[in-house]
Image 1: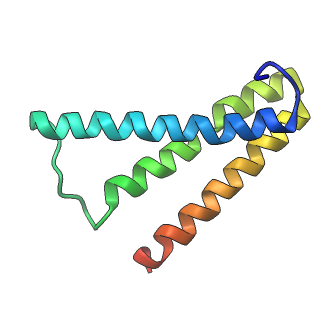
Image 2: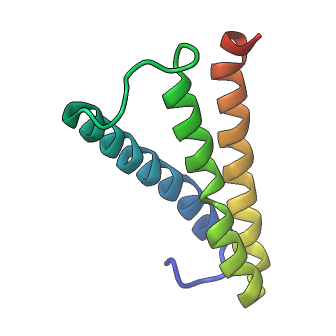
Length: 99
């Protein structure tokens, strides 16, 4: 399924890749915090989670570029839809904290 030019392929990749990236980065920073290599205090509340979430969303640029080289327009459209939904949800969730 992931090797096809389908809208569903782009949506699945666009959701699963940032989710996996967020979990991996979150676990790495928790491990670093336990070992004493990273501080748990940030500049503001939820700073680490906000930053990791935006980095995880930005990881969608990788499949977007791969699909662009293959000229898979439907898969690109799926990744863009998933990225837009994730970005809007990020703003809705963290927006009130930032204002």
